[in-house]
Image 1: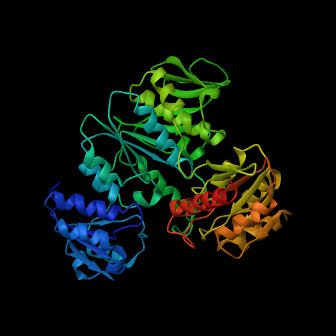
Image 2: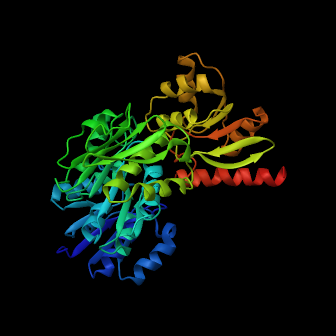
Image 3: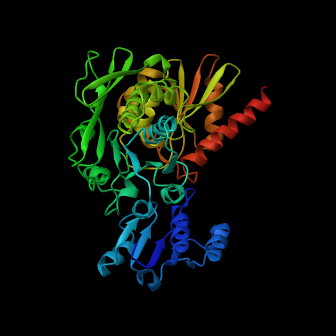
Length: 458
């Protein structure tokens, strides 16, 4: 990498991609400045690490020093219209996403997964499958550690599996995963993008730099995934009427069995009952993981073993406890209405939903249609509670209660309405930033409330 002077814009939240990028650059002997708009007091631990590595720091704003660089590396939490980025574009200073830096530093091929919903589960599933093979697997991006941290640990014979969100794709230039997975596309992030078309264009950048030597795994049930142009070879997954391979390469369901084909040779992988994850959405995630495993040379029995031993993902349909006969499920990663709809559809028992959070401009009418069929009660809290309630009333659903307090008070309302055999599902259908640092913080808070409840009601 010939560039020598870097500015890293933002340290970042829990994932701390800015911290990881700066430390990686400093370890390569690059002249590095970290510019953070928050005060130094918010990042005392990070400051010590950066200063020890020889990184220059500025806090409380962005000075002229930001633009005295060959490249600006930007944290995904900074919106593309932020004034320092606008000024960098005006001056012609290149802007890289952290994943662009990671790609340029990675000695190992990358499998990258994106989609509006299911990214985290699919990424973890892919890692579980690939771990059954002969290559070491590193996981990063939106899951676990920043991607630049993952690739710095990898060796050329390893695999890096990355969960990639739209903000990470805004400033890529050469990022080209060996295998790209396009799961699905639906309304989201309208707090960040002007319209759905802009959001879709950003999502589609995952395959923008791929070549004919790469692969793109496509969901045949999703129009965006199925039709998005790419130079890479396509590997579709979906449903089929029979056991014969519908295409030379692909993964499909025939009855309750999952099949995969490479070069026209079909093989049985596993059956639906051997997959521990509930719901149609998780079946799609499973088919995507099977596809990646087959592309990277794993045998059907290895893929099946990786699926069977998968423990699930924290904050996604995570059963926390059963208290007084009521099951509590943490689905804090449900940050948009469709994700919550999928969680609801995966559950069969009587349901009480806790939802609400910060504003992303989403349409809650589809959620109303689902809860009117599936939920006995919805408890709404957070900044969006009134707007969700208005969508419910538009469709004639009145089975909700408004809670002006915090998550603990919303949980108390739900608990008071529950009887043994019910499920209380915490799936907010919104972002978390009105009350929490991120969806992990929100989910951890919910689980702590349940643990306190268990202690009171052993």
